[in-house]
Amino acid sequence: MSAARTTRAKKATRYATNWASTTLPIGLGAMAMVVGVWLLVIPFPKAMAAARAYDAAIGCPHRAPSGEAASDEAGPSEAEFTEAASDDCLRGVDATVQRSWTRGSRPVRHYLEFRREDGTRQELRLDRGTHADAPPAGAQVRLVSWRGEVRHINYPVAGTRDTGGTIRTLFTDANPRTAHALPLAWGLGLAFGGPALLWFGCLARRYAPDNPPRDVLLPGTLPPTVLVLVAVSTGAIAMQGDPVADTLQQVGIVVLGGLLLAPLLTWYAAPRRRTAGRRKGQLLSG
Image (tube, rainbow, N blue to C red; front, side, top):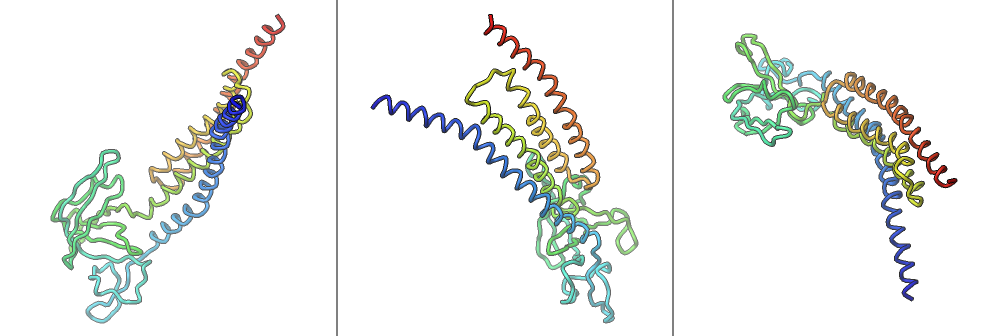
């Protein structure tokens, strides 16, 4: 009875070890690949389409005091917009900067509080890289909304808006031009990281029962290790929110480097595996 229990316990331990080292990484790798491809095929193109629509948007029409149609470029209040105006146009409202502050450390998040012309207050988080040009407290600005969210802030840095001063634009964290960064970064990371997990799981399924020496196992682990490095590097590049063409160019360089590095490392490790095999054969024959 005791021997049967011991046998069952060993089988359960072996099954748990096999599941953790083979089935789990294979399943997670397959799921990561599916999610990564989905992010690259659906959310990423949608974000790119939204960025193009935002760049093509014009000011919402409104009724000027004379009864003639005008655009939002003239700076109307929200009450002047026509009911027929679409959310795809740019809606502007005047506001005054009340204060600014930061949160967090890595990364630092920059916020501004505004008092709109109707008396309401609104807090906005600035997009990365734009906090250095933030307007000071008391500055008169214009909050520009698109599809229900404030996307950027316009404020004069020289003269006034009425006298044709220079207008500076700050983007909020709802900037459509950088919205592609998140799905692209996660999509690339999962698309390259998923095959690496699959590879590790298949290696474990093949070699786990034999428990081979390190010299035998090493060449097979180098390609998926390179895939992990490629996944991390491409994801970090995409998270910067640079233009898509520049991002894909950098991603292509990293992928090309990985394609060259993986076979070179495998070739470098393969002679060691053959040498270890020859030594083992000599010991057995001797």
